[in-house]
Every structure is written in C-alpha cells, then in structure tokens.
Length: 103
Image (tube, rainbow, N blue to C red; front, side, top):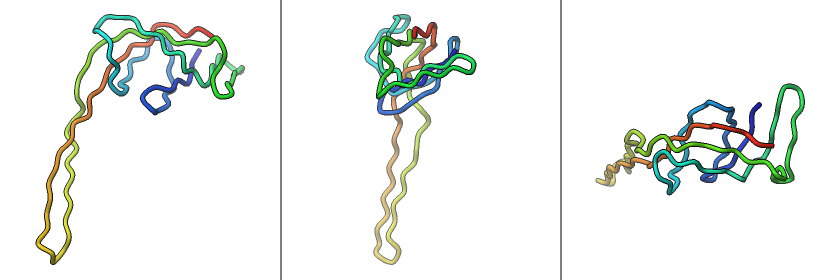
C-alpha cells in the first residue's frame, strides 16, 4: 500500500517502512505525527484519488532526526562589470519514518 502526501509544499510517494527527508517540521525526535494531506492512496491495482484530498485518509510517521542538507553554493557574476557574489545555503530537514497508512 502506498500514498501520495503533501507536506512543505512538495508531494511525496510513501509506503510503510520508508524513510524520507521533508521540509522541517516542528516536532520532537521520537514523536509520532499524523499527516492529513493525502492526495492519493493505492493498493495493488486499485487507486483512490482525492479532489483534492482523500476523505478520511491519513499517514502516521515517526520523527527520526532533524538536520541540514549539504551546502548549495550560489555564484553570481556579471562579465566585464567587476561584479562577483558568492553565497551559500543549507536547508533544514526532518527525517521521517512512515509507520502506517490509513485510508
């Protein structure tokens, strides 16, 4: 069984037992969270789509860790204008382990 969930402005296809990194969620490590924004639920050949959400469906996940992704380097330059700018960015993430899909 799998589900398509929406969190942090992005969509993820998840199944029970998977680990994934999503945008940072304010939750303690080891706590259980419920994601109610389920766009689709599928099992085998049957798929149930929501318009826009599947009614009564939810995904239960356990917060495994918080962290930061690798640094992304931004380099801007205008040729012949004596302009160079260097910048770095590290995005925060929350690692989730999907425990159950209800739907």
